Length: 214
Image (cartoon, rainbow, N blue to C red; front, side, top):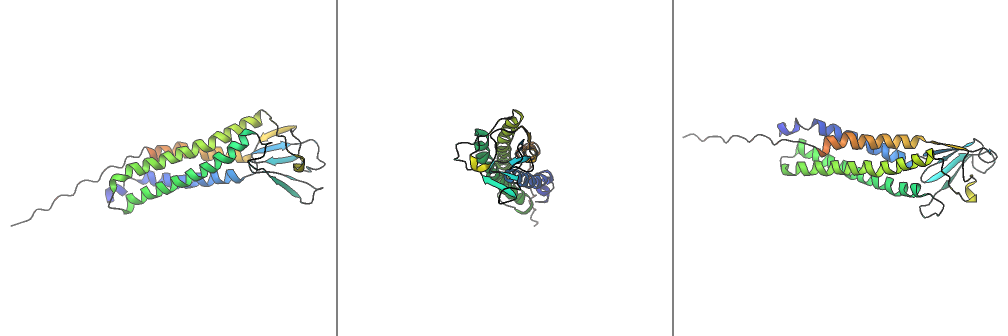
């Protein structure tokens, strides 16, 4: 058992980084700053900048009842562009896959360090964990890149009147949530797929059979 444990340090580091990448992906999903909209009319949007996420749009205002005004964006709303709808679905799927990947990786590493039975399942379990990590990275990177492309093309969103936002900004920039999410996607696809899905955990040497004396 000691021999197996001494060969799995790379996989243990991969598990730790998988947890970090999953936390980053979860944080990016909840952040509002996917798009930064600069508006010319500051009558309602007092700061001149609105934050458009995949779940809600927010801005600071001195004329509305709440200083930080936010409106939720439902996936069934007809005004949402396809990249935001896809982000709502795929980012949640990425969180679920990342959590499942962490569970599989934890189980595999636990077998290496503590289990003396069922060693033939190690390779399969590590492969499942690595595949789930790669799927997590793909599910998160697609909406992130798609939304970033939409921001660079300065595409508009036809918000309803209760949002108090124009359909098109004078200028928009990529928000911090996209950068955070891309960092998590690159981390989970690059480091973790190589350290977990390509795992090589050698078998321990066979124990010598003691001889029975006369």
